[in-house]
Image (cartoon, rainbow, N blue to C red):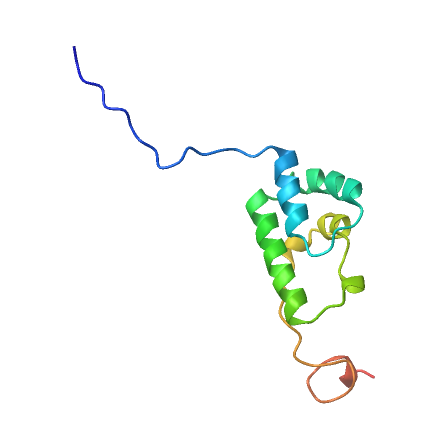
Length: 110
């Protein structure tokens, strides 16, 4: 008879269902509107990106909205954010404004 030593895992990996992923996404997103449309958009988005990519995008977007002091009415609905694949956006904080200056912004074109 041999001694069998069980292998201990620190924590077993638990796979989330698509609905559980969506619930985490929706809770983390800074604006909660049109949950049904957001759920459908999330299912489509998951064919294009991983859960981790989407959640990192939400984290970056939330930080960007906070740093820019974006009013809630200007934050995209979650379904729009997902349908437009915004998890891939470059969210460099703005450094100049539309109104003039020589910062290379819209003011230089007007």
